[in-house]
Figure (cartoon, rainbow, N blue to C red):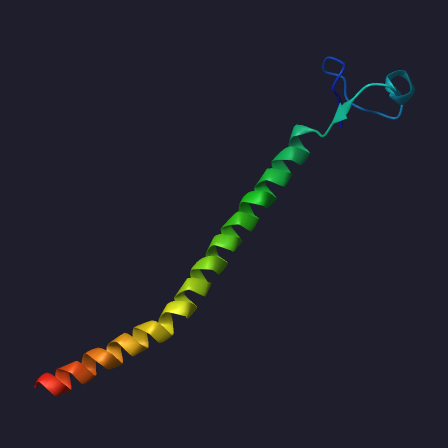
Length: 76
């Protein structure tokens, strides 16, 4: 963690008492890890949505193909 109220001062057990009233933020490395995880979860969600759409469309496509075959048989 880093101190928000100090310039370039990292949080450590040695200087914690001097900064007890200062705001702290997570380090950039932790933020980067969080963002990478968020991006990965978004990708997984997109893949899941696409799979769900394909699963939903499969019966419709089968019905459409069956109807097209039936129409071809009737018109031939």
